[in-house]
Length: 335
Ligand code: HPA
Ligand code: ZN
Image (cartoon, rainbow, N blue to C red; front, side, top):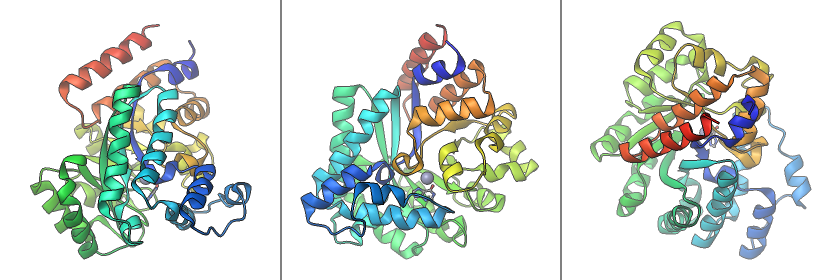
C-alpha cells in the first residue's frame, strides 16, 4: 500500500467537524421542502455554485442560511446520520461532533430538539456502524458572553449528552479572552474545553486560548507557524491541533495545499490531526482531506500513521477505547 492507499484504509478519529457543516445541498433542499422553509436559491446546483468563498465570514453567511432548514429532532438526526455513513466509508472509528445550538435556539428551535436528534444518531452509529462518538457544544463567538452563559444554562438539563464546549464562528475581533468567565464555569462543571484559534486570527489568540481558557485542544491553530515560541510550547506539551487542510484552502487561509504548514508542524513534533471542518461546503470528507494533503505535501506512510495515532491521542476517549483504537490502527499499518 502506498501512503495514499494507507491514508484511506487506516482507522482514524475525526475531532473537528461541525455537524451543520455536513449538510449537503441535496439534504438542505429535502428538509426545506419537508418543513416548508423558503430558500433563496432556486436549485441544488445554484446553491452549490454559491460555495465560492473568499474568507471565513463569506462561508459563515451561507452556512447559517443552510442551517435554517433544521427544525425538528428528526432533521438533526437525519443530518448526523448522513455524516456517520460518510465517516464509516472513510474508516473513521471515533468522532467528536461540534454543534452550534445558538444558530437554532435563536430561530425558536428548542435545545431539546437539537440535542435529542443528534444524540439519537450518535447512539445508532455506535450500535449499527461501530463508530463511537461524542457531542461538543460550541458557543458562537460573534455573540456575547452573556448569550453563551444563557446557552450553557439551557443545555445543562441535557448535560449527559455532551462532553465539552468549543468556540467557533467569526474569529477576528472576537478573541478568546471575551469568553474567559464562561469557560471557567464550564471547567468547574467538568466539561472538556476546546476553542477555534489561529485560523484567521493571530498566534496571540492561541496563547489566550491556552492561558485564559485553558483549552485541551485548539481547533485549526495554523497561525502557530508564525510564532517560534508557540511552536516550541506546542511541541513540548503536545496540546493537540485539529487542522483542516481543505477548509484552509477553501477559505483562502492558504493559497495552495502545497503551501500548507501541516508537514512542518508534524516534523516539529506537534500533535496535529487532519479533519474535515465543514465537509459539505469545503469539498471533502476525511479521506479527501487525507488524500489531497498526502499528495500535496508528499507525506510518507510513517506520516500517515503518525496522523492517525495523533487523532486517538487527542480524542476524549477512555484509556480502554484508546487502546482498542490504537490496536486497530496497528493492524492496518502493518499491512
Ligand atoms: N471556523 C469558525 N467557525 C466555524 C467554522 C470554522 O472553520 N466552521 C463552522 N463554524
Ligand atoms: Zn471549525
